[in-house]
Length: 347
Image 1 (cartoon, one colour):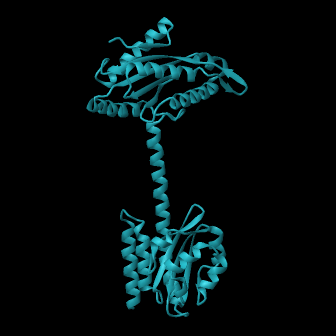
Image 2: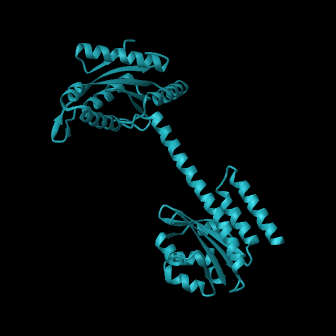
Image 3: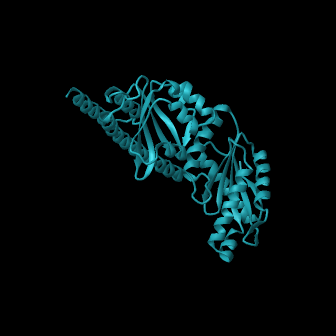
């Protein structure tokens, strides 16, 4: 009765921890509980499948940091377990493992996993659907007959808790990936993968503040593609989209690591060049024009576009990002009206 009460209390405690925030620690907690309440268990480990490899995520009685340096393929684990819902290995385990593992991992298992000391091991495979996803390993260092029917039943119950943990962690990982993708999408243009206007607004304010503190110049270049409307009209929007992707890539390659480019909208792009004077911005504009005017080969068709560029600079043309963008836009308008490639803002 005492063992039943201990088991019930352990399950209640672990179930409570499942509702907590740091679920990954529960792997270690369940393993520790298993060693305390499963008859014959003195040490143990938990392996979890990550993509196509099984890796150690918990260990008691062994060097977990050492075990984390190795992993096993799905085939190796399946060969070891077969179709059984539990496996008991007895003396000579090191020799049986030696037939499967013949590389440096065996040395790690002997050093960090005390392989030569183990007399018997109870292995509970945990499958989600038909796929093997985790294994619970419980070890005894003294007896070959350490694990009986009661040990197996209790270990299977705790293995079910491990399956619940695994499913929750997988769900949390999927949710986190979706959140990260939504966050990325909210700050990036979906077509060109460049930062969008929202991201430009946030980063440009920080860059301007830095320029003020460090007494550096900063220039904004406003680009509006010419010839792009004709590409859309003649070849269609799908081809136009590809032209925008190529152009965005070319612009990005002309910039330094600390510069910023965004797709402002349609066929317009904004470049913010940090520590860049107006004269240097004009030189950069020339490189951008040259890169953009390189013929684009798409589906056997040669396409040609160009761009006009309006330039404004801090501090001479404004003290805020919005003012600098407006001045660059006005300069761009004059460039298009007068048939010029590059126009700088009026002081």
